[in-house]
Length: 248
Ligand SMILES: Cc1cc2nc3c(=O)[nH]c(=O)nc-3n(C[C@H](O)[C@H](O)[C@H](O)COP(=O)(O)OP(=O)(O)OC[C@H]3O[C@@H](n4cnc5c(N)ncnc54)[C@H](O)[C@@H]3O)c2cc1C
Image 1 (cartoon, rainbow, N blue to C red):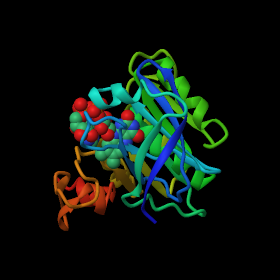
Image 2: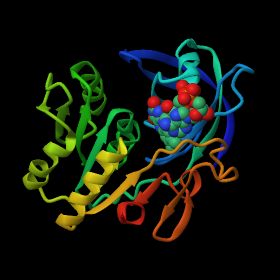
Image 3: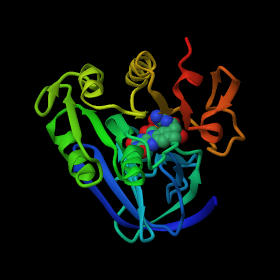
Image 4: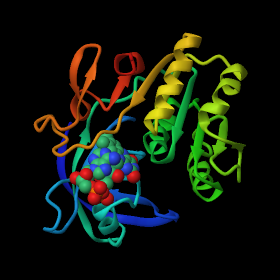
């Protein structure tokens, strides 16, 4: 159930250049794919910032964020003991069945909700992409022990395969028989992955990221076209079946 809570920061650590791991104290229940709307403790910020839930363990809610603008810059200055206000959990979640062999495909900050999916699935493989070894090694550490196999591609080839996750994807799909692919990351990566999944007859769900203001379905700023008409990413998503949203 959705709650509005004041959450004390337990950790706000820069784990790679401009990437922070944020752990707060929050007594909520959620599923992989859901997100929070975070209100910064300053009157300079009216709108909340959406962040994906990476895990919940013993009342500790873990998130990751990249510093990209004013809000995340301010967030990066907060210390343990400071409080943020959260509306959580929001949105729907990935469809994860224990019996399914799942491949997670993620790039950049899209790996955050996939970490939660790895934890819920208990037997998923992860294909991850990032800019360089510094960035990807942090994620590798997070997924260690949570995903079965870890496949890596980097933009600069400093670790794993040189290139994009979608360059590596065909060989990963050749190596095992997957029932489902869950994807989160840059749109081009999600589109290409969805296309390949379709060609191979594998179910595919994508988690979309759209600029949103309220996160509650009221402001319509995150509306998108789907085969079922207009849908709101914040409320009807952010997880969609790939063919529902990538149909053209
Ligand atoms: C469902 C969802 C989950 C997300 N999960 C993560 C995550 O786990 N980690 C992470 O690093 N980022 C995530 N993002 C993106 C993150 O919300 C933005 O990077 C962040 O809001 C930028 O805020 P800013 O003030 O630093 O940037 P600014 O560009 O200054 O932001 C100005 C305004 O635009 C909004 N905005 C800016 N970029 C985005 C964006 N990409 N998506 C939605 N709103 C945006 C901000 O919330 C703010 O209201 C997610 C976005 C969505 C929609």
